Image 1 (cartoon, helix red, strand yellow):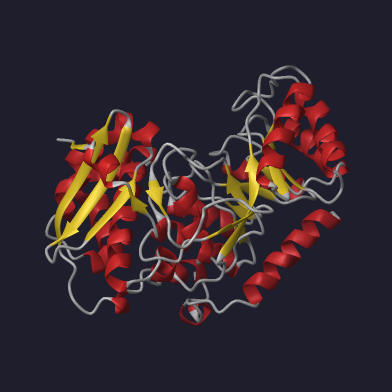
Image 2 (cartoon, rainbow, N blue to C red):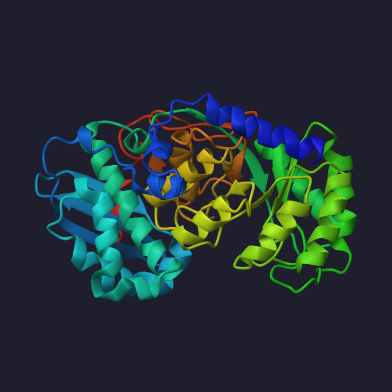
Length: 414
């Protein structure tokens, strides 16, 4: 095992051992299935809500290609979220026809039970994937905003203890199709703008069966990135499932030579045994889970040491509650959680709230730039990266206020 991987895993173990986890004792009840015990532990702090929070209205709002979700309780409390705009352009009927009717009249305090029930409602389980989870996550973020307003707590404090009031970011980019030299100039520009102390670049051709665009780009870019940013920069690389096992290992050995710090999705995301093969062969941490829709598949990957780092996307995986269960399973095996961030709407904001409550969060988290097209105010954070660090909002719910005129432009869908 290389020094890079050993240090990363040692740090993850120390984080886990030193954290005050809210899910202790799960080994005592079922030694045969400790991960199942973790999944049975509640995430949402129901004790913060002594009175019922009945959902009176649940609305999907649209203005051009911008989507908002607004939820209102019978007591008049309100929560709002910004959806994954690119995905909801095609998935909004699933929201209005398969999810919205179910939640009306339900008690939001029972959110985790409702997640189980809506999965079966109208046979929604047959839709399991981004098609179901993106609309459902959009609803969850609005519900958590609602509950945060009621409890006067930020979202992170509803799903765990606040471990990370500030988030160190890694600058992510995607310049596939450009030469290594063109790519490095664009990468430098982005990294220097955010002052990030870590970064991630794309290699391979994305689910491309070993092809690179242009040919040979990855082998040229790996040493060029290290040379450009020096030995102190934390460098991650993402192949988006570009390789088979043999090629993934070959490329991984080049990454090891230049002491890269994370190897994301070396083979296609649903090649589970193959992912495990690459992980076992690598001396640097292997990560994955961006596209993973299934809790049981994460269960397998964690139990079988198929990954070193889990990366649930809180939009693609159906929200923060489900993702927190993945993080907890990972913590039990001294693995870190570095969630993937969807690049539209306010994905970065929801990611920060989630990470703030994850004790075994990695040292750096994905950043693709702030969405300046959404007018909002945040009284408790300027939402700017300073020396690669962003302060997590501490106000109730999501901690932001959307411009009322912007919200008013949106009309109810359906």
